[in-house]
Image (cartoon, rainbow, N blue to C red; front, top):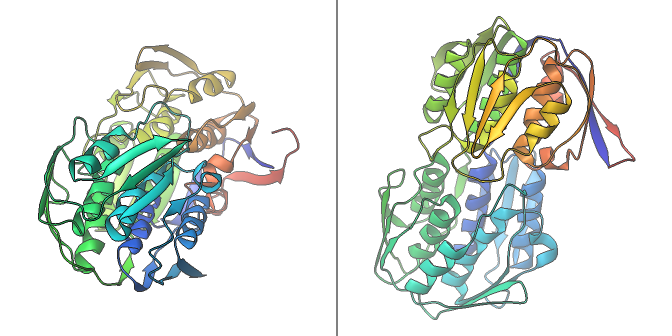
Length: 422
């Protein structure tokens, strides 16, 4: 096992290049199930979740070869391979994205119930009920979802609540369904739109992606294509939160600026100065003096839950009192206890954390509870007065490509070492 050792007080300076978006890449890879042929998916982030998804696709007859940040895949069209096993699924929530395309393409799917971060209940019932409405017969037994349907039928799906993976799953399934499918209360995240863009390039008929109403007219077949994954807005936001907290000046390349309005507004309010050069390049400057800001997470285009822990880290030494309200997941304040071990003054009541900025913030031995919390702990370590040891960083590796190396290139004192006590 490994851990990160972080020495605080260094400001960040230099250039950083944002990797491809994990939350776009995973459904895009799942979409390759829908058609035989060869794919070249570029701007792939080199992450553990991508490795896991590639292994899952291999069990379904899709071979892969990685060259740099380009993933070459070949779908050999074996319709007998329908099972997604637990031993691979258990670490990654996004594995549920395979259910819709397998069922639509092969007529039967057996997918293990997913694992992933322990950040609250994230049921798959919305996926199941939507597929049942499209004509599938679904049973859940022995930890597996078993779905059967000769041909999915288009229909109107009214999601009870906004679900990103649910929208993506049914979007993929509907491309090969018979007739028209209408998704109401659909997720509007840019990653959903990125998935729709590759599906359209494959030959799907989709209208309204990026809005709460998506209309899909099913087609008889799709084709394999080459595609470039969008940049990661959460990784970009994480680096911007880091420089807000530490002070310094960084130039960010390959930044998905148009999809980051809520993040950029909150960080500017906290004192970050932004100079946007073009659609994907910006310079961020911070004095290190942080103003307290209140935020609440919500579905896109609101402030993303995946940035909550990192933003809270930037508030730990802010001047004043800030509140952070979590409206997406009910168990996403697990990083608070670790921040408090470092001297943070935080009080949690229900879905709101009240953060009172402190002057003295010390390093400590701390432990990551989930992917985004691990990034928040790194930011906390960067502003602490002494050394921090961060364990369970396998969470970090699920969503950030060479995170500590990128930070080190910006001047952070951070290193990865072997650990025996995780």
